[in-house]
Length: 236
Image 1: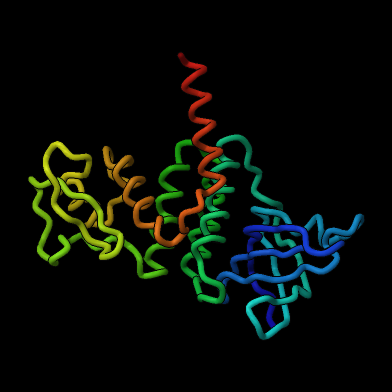
Image 2: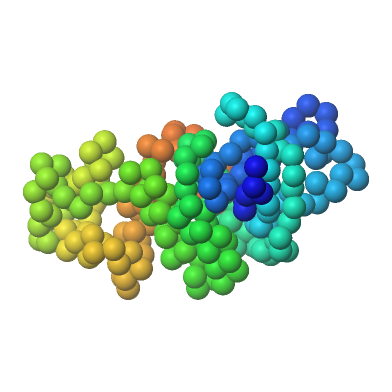
């Protein structure tokens, strides 16, 4: 096969010297494979198979679990630390959990590579993660539909909550926690990065992603919450 541009999403030990890996690739989407011998001391492949490093891979196998054959790095890994590293781990964990194996995702691959580069810049982390989440939802036909549950238009003066099963919104009382129709209609235009909508876009993408990642909490999200708590305590 032609070597595929790829990024490592997750790696865990397998047997004595191998690893089970999840990668995202340009043409084949999420691929799960065995990397034989990669855990062996002195293995050249061990140094290559690192998160956030652009790779070129080939593999063999007809089932869902492949066997990697060639691993080459094309550039140095993006260097992430602190909050940026946690954001990168979140991106990797999210795609590993939510993206089905074998679904072609060239647009998502491009957005992932774009996101990882921008995680080095604190001011761009939140917006780049939202763009990745939205592209993932669109890839899986799971993005919010900005209509009421009966398919009527949203009312700017009404408050709504999101119904994951229908991907639509249902009206709620003014005192209940939710989102106003005016803000939702702004998001419906595709302007997820508009000033003042950062909190809404984060909450809405999280609600839309919840059915895709299941009940088990994301480890990376828990780590980010702990970091935020420590920062708040430090300022107190």
